Length: 281
Image: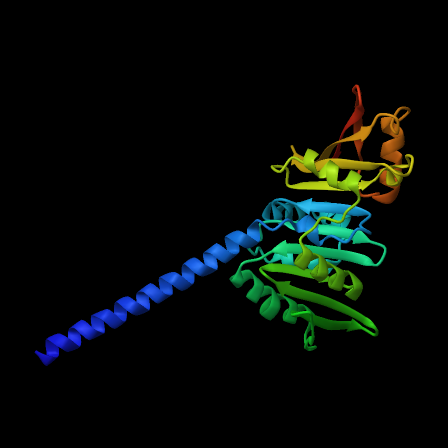
């Protein structure tokens, strides 16, 4: 009788442990699903000059591995520490890069395993033998790695979102905005993101002035690979691009990115100008 009772108790304990494990797993999965629904644009400070959305980080990582020339283009704008995270092939669903006068801010939703890998494996390996300095503000833990004299790389992980930057001001602003949950970007920039193709590997919004056009307008485009060429498809407001030529655009961008040999096609529509460009790699 005692042996039988012991078996019943052991079975009940095993069932209880199993149920607790299942409950913990479901809690983590539900939390990660909730984090995946966070609008990363709510973290971008309103001083953003350019936004780069990576919808498929694994595809971007493969593009840069297969085409070293493309890596040099992205490394020209994105700090290598962010690209090194991509190179580790972590299961990252999306990344938002926002570019500011103070520097670049990267935001990405991460699961618990990815967050642990970044915080305990990838970054320590990149910054060894230095250890990060921890500072806590408004319930958020910030970690800062010294890179050079008076130059620190910082990051925080809060509610399943990893955010990193070399600018402490941008980090703190992103953390504050994350708690508020409101998009504070300029209205035109906020409207343009609705034109993005979410199936494209990347989308970008940048000032029209970077293309040698009038200031005050923005350009949005989808970035992708096609038959061994790096391509983009986007549009410009018609008044801004009324006298635009493909050759002028190509010269402007090739002056900034000499690695590329862009060929533009321009199609004028009723209210905008559609742009398609490709560069062989």
